[in-house]
Image (cartoon, rainbow, N blue to C red):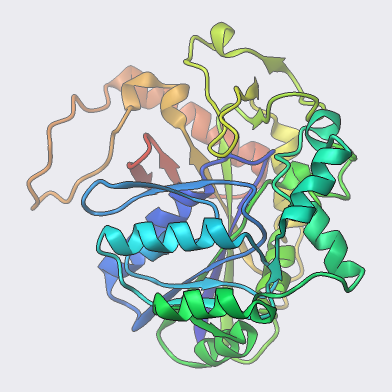
Length: 373
């Protein structure tokens, strides 16, 4: 029987889901409680997930799951959209940096073609709704109209992948097999954020799918009720200051500016445009917890829903890069957390717990550091 964890965004994307996923993968690897750790990436390459390997190399992956450079088996699921040049470049970069772990791509994943990017440009999707314009929505529309190509329809791409040691197969069947085994840990790495779901009030300034755990499980082809899936945990990433992408990207409660917050401007991983920023939105996070199976849930096969608070150092600068080290290990020095800082931290964490109606499992303090609770 296997444990399945789904990492989702609780706001408008860019909640550091890649960092949270990396922390979970690294913890499972260190614990050595599992024979295999499988990291599944779903959806399309319109969002970048940043991860650092053990040597400190930085990767901003749009196609590969972050586990590709952390020692996990990496899967690009059937419900994903694949941009061949992006995928091949990321595989080459990972290999170049010495990461030769297994990568599996579903042959039924949808291909993003130049025509899809052109279609989004021609209707000014970027200007109208703040889209990244990477062709994902147009490719999904083509799939619905049964005109899209799949990975396995592109013989040249399949050959290129196989030359790189990548298996092209039915990942739904493969994941069902892994789930049936003992000591297999499966983590599904979602994209976007709950508030960007296509059926949310922000429509039409949304992404082209919903962004809940149940949606990402469907994209991966994993049923919560299938044989072998024993426990499901949903980890909702929520940053202290939510962001939306640049431009006409939709409403945001209590919007402010980086200058007013006293913080440097943030730019998007993919488009490098300055992000919009707002104050903490309790209602949005609570809705995300509810719609991911938390709060008043049925006890039958209910997931555990927990929160990972990210970028807490933006609120409490004294916690920048703070982490709790193994007392028996050689740890670089840190000034520690004084009484005032600790009180401020505990007050904010308690507010998050009260707002979300869910426990916190970790908070991140920098691009490579986190504290588990």
